[in-house]
Length: 118
Image (cartoon, rainbow, N blue to C red; front, side, top):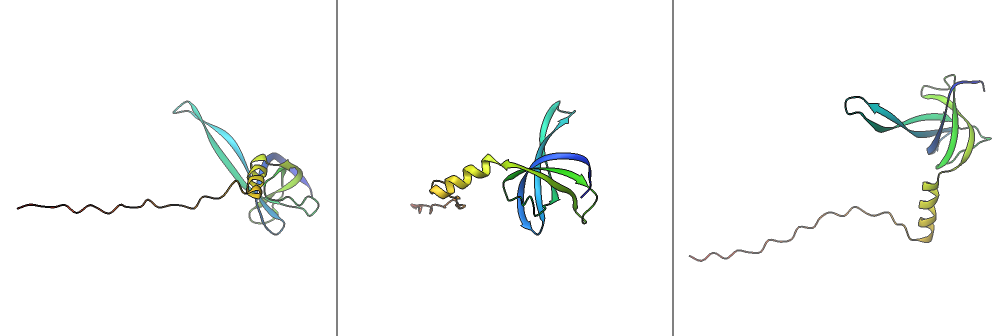
C-alpha cells in the first residue's frame, strides 16, 4: 500500500478489531498562560497487516496513508518490540504477585446510643 505523510511511534492499546489496532502515543503541549507544558495523548486507529500482526502492548511505527475506512488513515509499517509496562504487569500476574484490587467501599460504623437524663 502506498504511504506518505507523517510517521509516528506508539503503543498498541487494543487489537480486538479485524485487521485494525488502536495506537496511542504521548506528546507535550506548551500552555502560554501558565508558561508550562502539559502532557497529552493521541489515539488513532491503524491498519494491522497480516504480515506484521501486532498485539496489545507492542510498540509500532505507523505511517499516514490514504483513507482506508471512515476512521482509519494510518498503517503499521513495522513492529519495534514490546512495551516494558505491559511485560512487567504480565510477568507479575503470572507469578501471582500482582492482583487487580477490587474497589472497597468505606464501612460506616454504627452510632453509639446516647443516654439522656431528665
